[in-house]
Image (cartoon, rainbow, N blue to C red; front, side):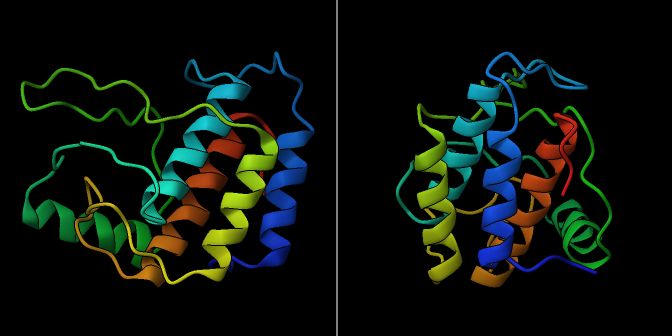
Length: 152
């Protein structure tokens, strides 16, 4: 069953990230704890309309529908090592911004309380409703917490 993006979720996420030492190493990938905070912060702020990101669509319309059904509808886990590509097929840098754990907490709280109005469509799923964005945030955050060995 899908987790709700509620006050309990926010507190659990903040507690798990806070439990990670600054030099924590992920179980896969090259992300640092600071990258984790900055990446989650940028993703949340994107859907709040507070962060701009120019990421081209990563999939055609049929693939978008299938991925949306699998990830948001059937609750299939997100795969590891997802890399966004530019128009020429080159890897884009990790979407992130500088930020603190307190910045992340505030963004989580704003996301929980807000009807989301993102800065653009999702690169894989296209346009999403506010509820779909929140469900995707729960999955995305849980994915990265598993990456660091502190699952929800």
